[in-house]
Length: 331
Length: 189
Image 1 (cartoon, rainbow over the protein chains, first blue to last red):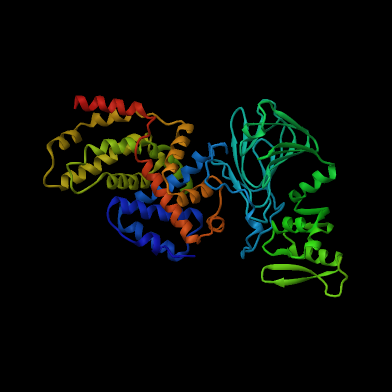
Image 2: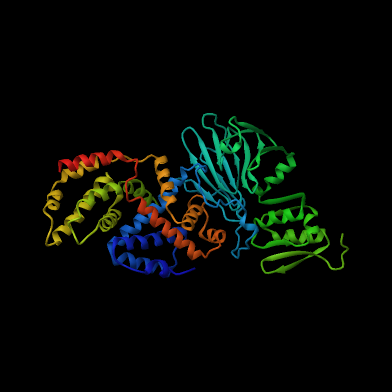
């Protein structure tokens, strides 16, 4: 971690310099706990002049308050120069260890701002105050905004599943990139994917509306149906129960493959693991594969795939490369 | 109150009054070479932070009175002071007048104002800010996404906070009530 000297220590003096330093400290202390050297540095700076404390408090309060203001944004006003839609976990191997927290119990969230987010490989299950249950997939973020007449959840990135407590007077609405999914009492999953926002209904019925739905009238999505608000236009698909179950298996800390291509399966596994499974052989990547794995267990997946296709696993740094055995017959 | 709760209290009860306070101070510290508005605000915030928040009934009144004390201390320390400054400081009812005219922005106005300020940020700075605050990314993820060092992300974010906080120093276009009242006051003054 870089020391604070670069951004903070330069220049003491007028109120404007103080604000600059205060901003740097506020951003850093909000990101992570300061280490002891940083804490000493901050304390020394605060003691040097009483105005430093005032500026630091101001910067911290503002940085925190921006979360409250942003929480008012329904996910539709965002005007991001480069919206994040692609899944960086497919491109980056991260060195940090991934804590698999699937069903580790419910977690507290910040009730004032209502924000919950997960790291890659972490699944969180959250009991909301009305009795509804929110399960957040890895590398995802939501904002919970409950008002008297509406229970609103804003999906900022990734995927979340909802088990909605019935309350006709207070509809439950999930908003994601201009799509509004309204439910009264039901179970469904909303995910922001490469192809668009996908809504999959497990139980009951939801009404899909909003700018991104492509229709002024709400569209009703029923059990085992999937709606995708894609850039190329909205589409609806009927899934079978097994397919729906497979799609939500992450909620139980599992990944289920039932005839998916090995390449796609590996991408799914990599979503939860810092060890990446790599398949360079295109015919192998297209082979159909079945199996059930714990989220994050890339090694078990690679081992099972190697066994199924008479291949072997070669470790290359953070990568598990799946190759065919030299003497095996090729297609 | 824990620190986080106290910061939220500060954001909710104190920060919204800063533009008015700055305006009020602007006319009063001009005659003083020893202090500027930024410094008085910082000093006032430091005192407000150390004070027991539970005991403060009106943060706005407390803030204005504290700022007035600070200016008063500077006046007493200065050898030469403009006469009108001293006269203003004696008029406590001016503060009462200012205190009564605050109009709180609605949430949507606050959001619109934030978006407006974000338009003025340099592109990378703004991108880092939006990934942080709108998409809740960690600095590490922002670094990966933007293909820059984590320390650079931190600098972008600190700069963004600095620029947003500068934007917040002025009253937004929507808050007309306070301004009109103040203009009227100045005519009388």
